[in-house]
Image (tube, rainbow, N blue to C red):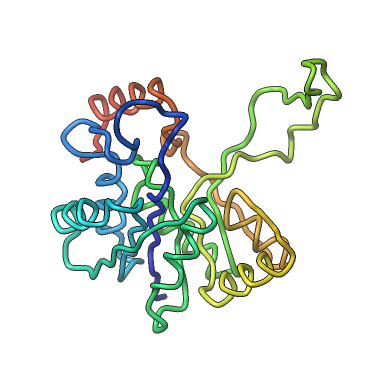
Amino acid sequence: MKVSAIIAAGGSGTRFGGNIPKQFTQLSDRPVIAWSLGAFSRSPMVNEIIAVSPAGDEDRVAELAQRWVADKPVRVVQGGATRQESVRAGLDAVSSANEWVAVHDAARPMVSPDLIEAVCLMAQEVGAAIPGIRVRDTVKEVYDDGLVLRTLERTRLFLAQTPQVCKRLDLLSAYELADEKDIRATDEAGLLEAMGVPVGVVQGNSRNFKITTQDDLALAEAMVRLSEFS
């Protein structure tokens, strides 16, 4: 199984605040993006890494990749205005020799090689796969005015994580369909679902959360201090 990892780090992180994009914010001894680069570098499933950078930060990302990625080729490409555009830019840079792609949010620094492998193996079995964690709390759908519309049945609800793994050609076709029908999705699985590709779900990890706010960064810092991550 030949897998190209696309690390999506092209966003500006406006919800995060601060003076620099969150992917370059320091988390313990390295920037946030370096944790994801290191995890995919250590994964035996991955044989190349495509890092999608904000415009103007390509040299910075290349320097981080040189430090934190060992023994695997890395290409840095400029991202777009949206996550969907950024991932497409990364997808266009993937080697045609690789059948599979694994798309991961750089803002999920606590991903592990074990989880990467589990998602890859599920994708190989069913065609595409994502990690997900079951919703534990009661979920309400709410009107714009703040009143509850209804309570959703949570037994089948999962919170999607990354990496999301699928065949390279399937994702290319999904992007072509999205362009044709003006489909906008927040993850790759949404595009694949629109095309009818089955997507499996493996048990994710609560540590694999996305850093969106300063509180998330503080939680990640505490996890690094208390865990085996390195």
